[in-house]
Image 1 (cartoon, helix red, strand yellow):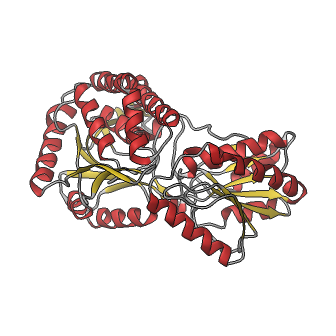
Image 2 (spheres, rainbow, N blue to C red):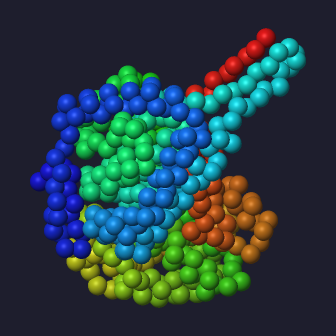
Length: 444
């Protein structure tokens, strides 16, 4: 079977295969992207590029139903959630269309001696490589391509092997929006070709969203070749519950935080850390709601993904954890479940509809457990004490903290992590400031 193929996870059927790129096609893509940066990226204004990005947003909206069906077929996301992802992607493109001129405006510097003037002028750096995952096929591309194309960088986009149809649909959108040949190029590249692309002197940076293993491999090649890297990797996000004046609502938020995208989100709540005085009631209500989720969940992205999760759960149970679930894996479908009594040294990221729940004595133990992970992407804190909320938010080692809220991400809010969850930021004004030349112009 080809490396790039659409395999419907609900049936296991291979719908269509796509050939991987030849060496000549990769060279053509590099040549086109470099030429587009010289002839388009440098020659157009921010306003002109913003207008093109706005057309990308409009085409996402116009083609929403078609785009939703594609990723439903590729990775099993429910049609309503697929359509919502398209809407969020369109909002990202519109955000950069609305704000690019402000974000990229010259930044004056006050000189200490007052002699002359100085400013920072932001400009594109050139060709970028984007390596994107399967779990949000449109959103992940939008938060990379939106700011960088508006800035004037050009993009080679290597999507996940199971998302070739959505990858092709996206390239067509950029072409139909009026971007020139080479500004955005979809490439069905192998891992070996990716390494060669990163090393190519025409490429100035690489952004990857994916696994720790993939991030380490890309960062190694990029480091050897002195290329800027942005990495958004895995997470084992804590959901800390210290107090609640509406436990029903808190439990609903906990379930929502875990089961977005059938639990297949890097920043999903994965470890539920609950204060002892409300632990039993929380666990009872939470488990009841989790087991009810069976009717709402689609398949995981593939049978292989479900098998990996099954293996992880079996190892956790063998190490002493207790699992409450109903049913068993059937192909790519995995039943929702709750793990308790996990060993203290269990630190795996569970990428699917299973939640781990921990009992703690109070704030200090909750923070210690939350930070006892190699990851540091997102986190959630629920408490009725405002001072405690601020205190705990400061103590958590993560790139993002959401207090008394889930699903509160926004196009204007920076997204990224620390520790083994990666580095760099996407979205918001910070997302347009990663692959940019902050050129100093000093006039005497």
